[in-house]
Image 1 (cartoon, rainbow, N blue to C red):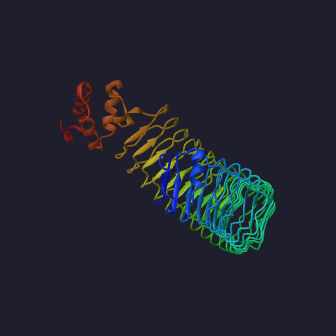
Image 2: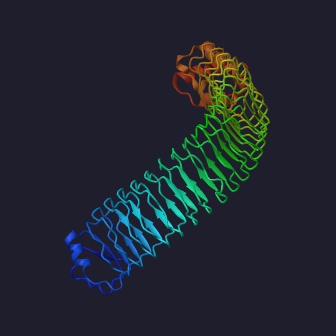
Image 3: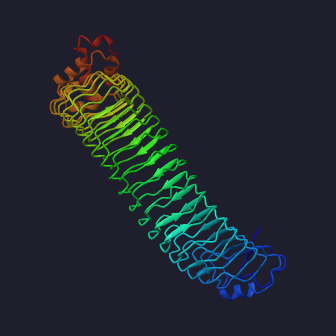
Length: 498
């Protein structure tokens, strides 16, 4: 357990037995006075955020944390030091040779220009060290974060490196001789012209917005590839173990190869793609705004499809497992195929769509603004529908499971059938709608004429439970009016209890 050194105890405490100390709430002079004492057993020093200006040469130290000590300009040679955190030490210029150091955090040391030979270092975080121009002589390094080190032009000869994050190194032009690399994040490395083909162990590659890249090599172990925004990539190679591909904004990409293990594909705004097909393992596809896309087919495992705003898409077929489809604003899509397990369909503003097939598992339908849609089929599992703005829709079928419906601005809609489960209804601006077909609970009865109420009661004569509920939840003059109408109804009066 660390002993906390403060302005109250720094003069009286015995330093000869201390093994771990934390400096807190002391002036620079107090710190200098205290650290001038002997520390024969000290192994851990934490002076984070302190006003310390000089680190003492305590050779027994194995752990030093001087993060955010802005007065420090150098680190002494400490031969037994294993862990060093000197992050945010903005005056620090170099890291000396520390033969036993295994972990170094020097992120945001803006003036750090040199890191000396550290033969046993395994973890290095030098994120945003803009003055650093090279990283070398680190044979044991396995993890390197040098993000936003804009002074770096190359990274090479790190034989043990497994994890490299060099995002935002805008002057980095080459990566080489990293045979054991497993993860590479080089996003926003705008001058990087190539990914080495000898990265045989690479599992995850993030090269998003590397606009100078023209190709991806064949990487046999690659499992996940993110090349979003790589505007000069023209093709994706055969990557036998790839399961996830994110290539949105690759505008020169013209095809997706038959990647047998691919389960997730996000290729939105890939305007050069014309077809997506024959990906047997694919379960998730996001290809929205692929303006050149014409057809999607032969994806037997697909469960989720997002193809919004694919304005030239004309065909969706052979998607037997698909559960969710969002194809809104696909102007040239004229039909939806029979999809036995489809549960959710958003085809809003598909102006070419004239009908929807019977879909036995469909639970939610959004067909807003489908101006050429004339009918909705019988959909036994449907609980929610938004058909607002379907100006040519003339009727709603008997949907026994329907709970929520928005049919606002359906100019041609004449009536609403008896829907026993209906809980929420919007019907604004339905100018052709016969109001007596609207369930009474969605109307203000006090504004309706006796004739209209009579029509409503007769219209609902087959749904006695509904009429009984209306009566039971109405009071005052409205209840008296309803009672009078019910008594005059031959079909209803004998079954209703007052």
